Length: 143
Image (cartoon, rainbow, N blue to C red; front, side, top):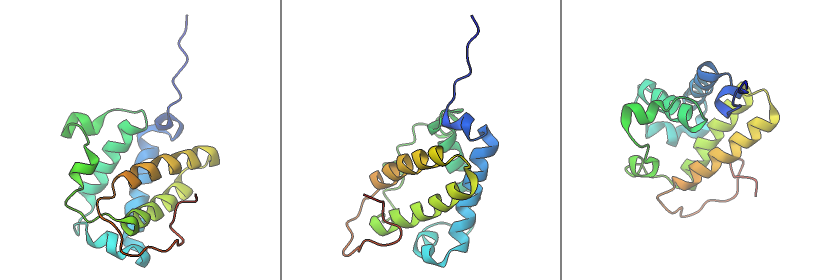
């Protein structure tokens, strides 16, 4: 009996090339968009290491090779990011960049929305600070 190929988000995105395009676009947007300046400022000047680690994480998270686990161990995302002040505003800035990256790099609208929803949940889990005031704005998750 012939096995059918598994249709993971990783394969639907085009494998390594597709995931690299998303991460490359994500970090380019972080540099380009003035509205995410606070997010950009908590990152080092050279984003290449952050881009590589996001690529490695997304590779495994999307059903591809477990690159992050192989190279760095368990992601422990919240613990690894605890040193950064992540409140609703930071989450929303991160998702703003991710929304635009997905919009430009994922042609299938259903897959794009599924990824957006799943990544929003990950980003929301990363919050480690309360926001003093965060009105619903353009970045807010559609409830």
